[in-house]
Length: 160
Image (cartoon, rainbow, N blue to C red; front, top):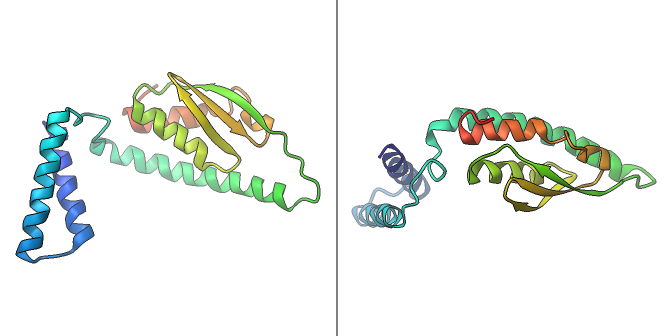
């Protein structure tokens, strides 16, 4: 029930923030769209921990701050590789095992890898991700452990 109420509040706030309209007709159309969305979500049984992660907003914010710093560091490495006269990249494809349990955590981890310059998540199968990296040394077995642990913590609510 808490996830349902959280989704309702989020939809109302999001709709009002995006529209900014106070006319009765627009407000009533917004209310109808929110109610319709809530009914469909309830009927499809998609309101759960993964679809409404409002209780973990602080963990997500801390994770995204950490990820932003990691993206800046990776940007610097890719910029240096692009500016050099000789291209010294050594690309590799590696399978990375994740400790993330939920689909939300796996998606967060896969997207975090892709957001980091020099790495791209190619596919996700079960608890393994296929990752392409510009530098083979950046794709060694333990290279993604901290990101995996942090994304599990943020998404699974304490995770591994």
